[in-house]
Image (cartoon, rainbow, N blue to C red; front, side, top):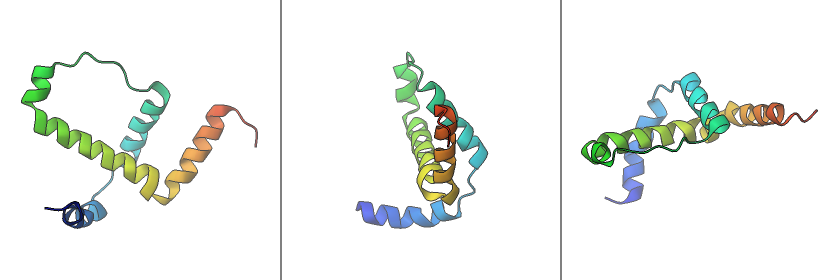
Amino acid sequence: MSNQKIWQKRVPDLATRSWEVEAIRVRLDNLRQNGFDPQCLDWAAVKANREDVLDRVQLRAEEYEYLLYLRPTAVKYLLVSSILRSGVRV
């Protein structure tokens, strides 16, 4: 199946999904402030749960994409939060 057909099937699902904006924002703020923690992964567990791990990565990517690029207030939120963190007076 081509990528275009895959996305044509995914768009209605993404459009009707109930987004937990505050939970996404908290995770995103945590990533912004702390970055990714280096982890020693248990590769056997990752391989054993490969599909679950890939589903979770896909879900997080879709959530961040929604909050950062698709939601109208996301740009305003990012600009204001970065200005406040930088200490620049406006």
